[in-house]
Length: 204
Image (cartoon, rainbow, N blue to C red; front, side, top):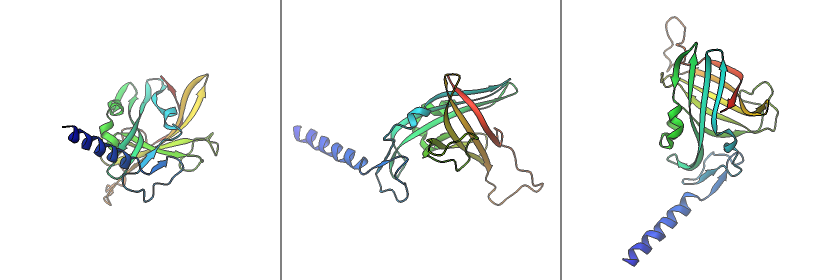
């Protein structure tokens, strides 16, 4: 019996070491050709600053985003620290989208309505209007749960507004046509606006 337990302990130790070797630093090391079973780690805890629930309101229209950091999730090739989230969009008092529960389900991984971990340090790729080169920001993916044709880019910048933690964001939605554009030339709209630019979400 002792020998069986020893074999199990040794096997788990080997698997654990394999799962974390090599460790790649998020925001520094490129993921191109990342070795199988490597670990893309948020060494400096940059993702932590973006965790939480964030809210923008304008009259009876609002956008709420919740983000949770999960450690060492396996994506089928390598392990990575990942922000998983969901969002609620209310327009003119009517709830159009609500995927906030996605943030509490790490099993969704990259299938969550918001996910990602790309740390950027420049003002390329959809910057906000007060972006400063060198500041760390995030680029995440955002999906439309009401359409399998709409997805977008969510860019997040940390801000402080009236002493409160805030995010300044850009959302750019797109539509995948599969080469079959509508005959009238008009693409169907996503559940949220095509472009959301330079709005501030306050941490709740």
